[in-house]
Amino acid sequence: MRSSSMAVALGVLGVVFIILAVLYALGVLQIFTSTTSGPHYKHAILLAVLAVASFVAASFARPKTA
Image (cartoon, rainbow, N blue to C red):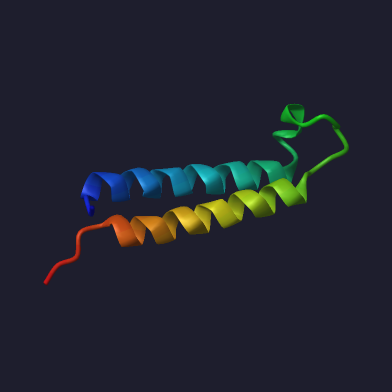
């Protein structure tokens, strides 16, 4: 089922994932992990992949014009 509201929600989720990825890469969100050894690049990469997946899903979810 294609709806523009679902596409917008997935787009917003993708933006949130990008923001979180940048914050993890900069080491700002290290308080949420068990160690405080600096930036967690694995978390940042995972969040970036989730952002791309969200944008792809948003592309499939939006209604197509004829």
